[in-house]
Image (cartoon, rainbow, N blue to C red; front, side, top):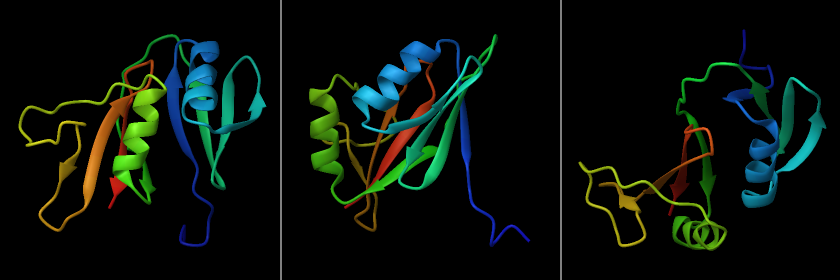
Length: 121
């Protein structure tokens, strides 16, 4: 039923201005819509809606598959992104975990504490 439907994703924020600065300025997404309730970004053809809320419970689940996790982590670190260091995983100096099949994963949070991941080689 949903196999032919277009996917969209949502996250929440307390502060639309701060969210726009991060997703547009830091991550490089193009903002395609803004009103007092939400921002919508174009995430390579997938709408990413950041909705304004009064109470926020940060969550995870948003991520990008990138060509090079190392290069992307390096660029985002230069832009001020701080990567997470889950204590139960052995990470590289740049906070990248390599899974048994060779896939690399890195995690960071947006200004509201929502967990985001990068996956790739």
